[in-house]
Length: 88
Image (tube, rainbow, N blue to C red; front, side, top):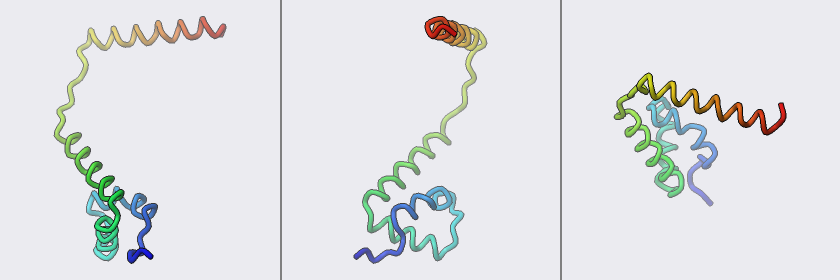
C-alpha cells in the first residue's frame, strides 16, 4: 500500500502549480513526498523542469522577411496541391 495519499494522476494535475511554486505548503509537502516515492513522477518533474529552463534560456529570433515569404509561398503551394488532389 502506498504511504502517500497523492496519486500519479493527482500529481500530474498539480505539476504546473508545483513547478511555479504556486501550491500551498501542505500540498507541496505531499507532492514532494510523492516525487520521492514515485520514480516515474520524479522523471516527469525533472524533465519538465529542465525543459522549462532550456526554453527560458532561449533567445527568440524572428525569421528574416525573405525566409518568411518563401515559407508562406511553399505552404500555399502545398495547400493548393492538396486541394487539387482531393478534388475540392
